[in-house]
Image 1 (tube, rainbow, N blue to C red):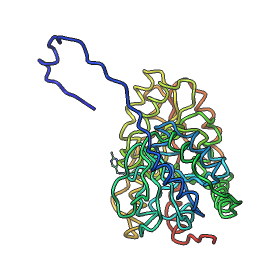
Image 2 (spheres, protein in one colour):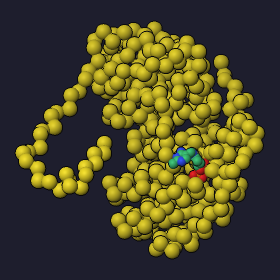
Image 3 (cartoon, protein in one colour):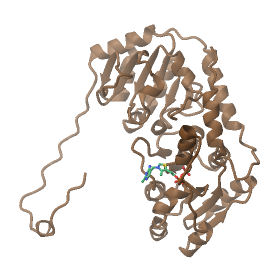
Image 4 (cartoon, helix red, strand yellow):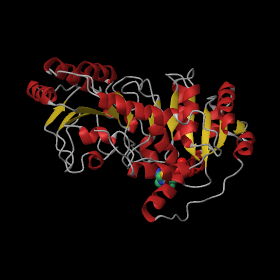
Length: 393
Ligand SMILES: Cc1ncc(C[n+]2csc(CCOP(=O)(O)OP(=O)(O)O)c2C)c(N)n1
């Protein structure tokens, strides 16, 4: 909230004392809603949990993992729900939310119940995963569900999320069995991820860039993503152990967030590795804040996905019109630009170069900029794969 006062009012003496803030009120779901949710879950054969950012904001990750594990229900998370369940968990089906069909879409196709926990519709429209509105939904959140023809929950469990999950778990009785479908989806995800570990292509494929970044980041280190094609790849390929370790601006997503976001993260967590991953367009929107970062003594790494254009807009134009216009631009020399500000700059010249460059960049006591040429031909390849997606039965 921002309150602006005219200068003459702001300069006035104030009489009296500030009023107390009052204690925040925690709301709890009613027993009848908890019972209804538990009954639906108990009789479902192929339930799926869709975990959104509310899980993280409400500190409900541990409760979610316990809930999913005990009831043997797989979990997909939204971009902003990353880390709600560790990506290594056998029930974690990683991140969903691309505007096109992807591996996790198969899980929605099969689901006979979606348990949406802390899910905000603005992040990933329910039209994408429930186009006909036929999948029954249990909504677990701090807030009531919004109205949408693809999102009309059977039951709204409104209240503290962790508490609701614990209480539903106590009431639900689900006979669980081994589910080859889930392990099959996990194998496909893992294969998609590992496939690029040794990729030699240059400019570097986005999957490989993100793979290498993951290699140098610890479980508690933090990625801040900017907005663009790189964000889609980060969502798809950067996987988290813990909540709040990959922050993605989603929904109403403003470019330019990565560098100031990384600066803030480094101020809060000076001992963690922090990386801002950004497109060249987003970098040029807020790169002046690197001077602030230097002055604030917040050494973090900025990795620029350099494609000389607005990659995501090109991708969308190509998907829709089969051609693109007005998306290219020229860039300054990012290395010289960094050096002119007293920072360290690096240019990646081959696929093998990236990992050692990242390691070196993290050793510096000033902010660093890595100029990394990216091969965005992968964008259209992903669109094509999406069209050809086949689900196991
Ligand atoms: C402030 C702002 N302006 C415009 C947009 C619309 N927009 C979303 S992605 C994008 C292009 C991003 O290009 P770049 O930063 O180079 O990243 P890339 O897609 O190439 O990875 C634009 C213009 C936005 N989200 N925010």
